[in-house]
Length: 239
Image 1 (cartoon, rainbow, N blue to C red):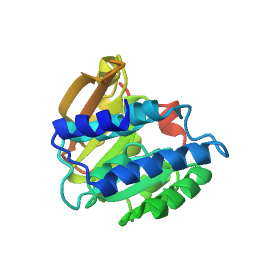
Image 2 (image 1 turned 90 degrees about the vertical axis):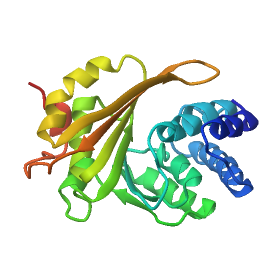
Image 3 (image 1 turned 135 degrees about the vertical axis):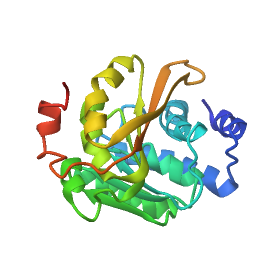
């Protein structure tokens, strides 16, 4: 997907990019490739693949869920900034927090935020389990998202404690995600969530499957969750 196709595809979904925003995506690509030579940020460095598999894939969250206005969004395990930084470029009023356990990625994101001129962004070096117990972040966000970080029962425990009541947890998955949704039913319910919407679509050009699950936060997460770092991955909340 070249830049022109990317711009056109977003416009078809009601997202019109200004020249500044187009320039921000260009600079994002340049920095991603530049920093990737020093650290492992992504296996995808071809321009057309980055625009398709990173930029468009990230913004696809907004095709069914509104991101307008000064919403607070927390991105768990964002790596090189996906999906929250492409969303921030498209929706400048978003207030973005990225939580990542690897400090060198936080260093890249700090530099990225400055280079792109992004305001209301913060990058937190922490495990998601630690952040979920920190009063500064616990049940503090309108939207919490994660992109293929772990299986859904694990993600639920990492993300739902960060969502405020009335907010949403949005999980992005690739193909064959239905089984994970069934596995996660108990964890989602236990942690105060409820499925609101799920939808599948094909990325254009290569037609690879994507699945997005949207969960409402309907009640507070019990205080004992999230459990200590590493436990959700080893012992997922499942019946």
